[in-house]
Amino acid sequence: MHKPEKPVLSLLTKGVSDNIPLWLMRQAGRYLPEYQEIRKQANGFIDFCLTPSLAAEATLQPLRRFDVDAAILFADILLVPFALGAKVSFLEGEGPRLDPMEDEKKVEELFYTQETIAPVFETLRRVKPQLKDYQTLIGFCGGVWTVACYMIDGQGRQDFVKAKEAAFHQPAFLKALMKKIEEASLAYLLGQIDAGAEVIQIFESHAGQLEGQAFDDFIIQPTQRLVEGIRKQHPNFPIIGFPRGASLDDYKKYFHQTGISGCGLDQNVSLEEAKEQLLPLGCLQGNLDPTLLLEGGAAMERQAKKILGALGSNLIFNLGHGVMKETNPDHMARLVSLVHGFQKGAEA
Ligand code: 1CP
View 1: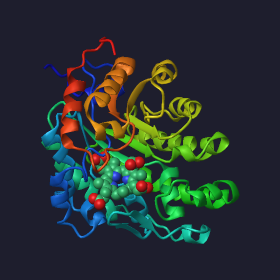
View 2: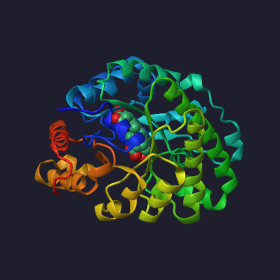
View 3: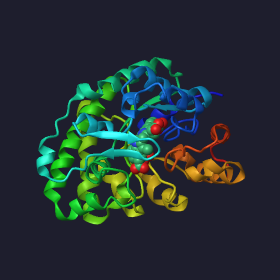
View 4: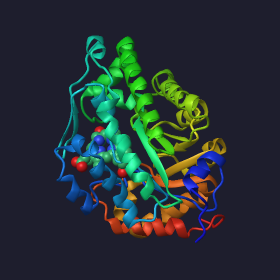
């Protein structure tokens, strides 16, 4: 099958591609037995992310199994707080734990050292030459608000109550913290680009926690500044923003106002609304429900075809959130061949 140079890159920069490309969020990780094997070789998850030989191997593992169109750096959004000097740990089966930030005094103590996370750049340099000519190398960071959520609440939560309270009652504290995260994230992303990342994705996984003015202040504005900061040094650099859980109106504002090149959609965005209201703004990425990938079979295939039929004119096929750790890799293989076999213009 003929493939253009790099379809992911091509869609984001030129808006054209012969094929509908795909990659999957969290395509590396715990659902792969070979990941579980190398994970044991590290002294904890941070050490794993900061050991280029292991992180490069984890990045490449899904590419050996599946013909995806992009590699995403194996790292984590919480490396930025770690490089700022926050205590970060990952408890087996329980997710991340951080010392919660409480006030501006704690914020003043944060100091970003790029050397702390420089091994990530080495991972990118090792991965790049191993990619096929049509595969794009994606770097990433967390959205500034999302990283602040973990730093204030100290762990993953349904509602991030403390971070939201800060947004409404301690805006000076939240802004000071976010400024540090934003500056660190920009330096980190520029480092990733220098090391070979061809596209950047900003994971604003907890965008759905805010709306109205708070969405503008704490999500749109910092993202806009990150995008500008990157483009000041790398004009037109392709950036995917993913404001997971945002309302349709906020998705529209986010896509329109931040300057991103493509917008990631979660599975709750309806295809009709995405087609009518977001596709005119540019390239979309998404949005198969990871639960359907878990389930596999006819339900998965039906929905994947619907997505391809509705958005295929300017789509990077992906999930609406990350691959779940219980997912059977055979379901991924089936999905990849379905997407690659889909002809543009076909009926859903
Ligand atoms: O035990 C282990 O092996 C750790 C599990 C794990 C993995 C495999 C974590 C801990 N992070 C990762 C890798 C990771 N994280 C990648 C790798 C590249 C790929 O996509 O293949 C990426 C892009 C992330 C990004 C990330 N980390 C996000 C944004 C995307 C999302 O899922 O919303 C978030 C919110 C995190 C925080 C985090 N790190 C790890 C976990 C379990 C979590 C989520 C915690 C929570 O539920 O709030």
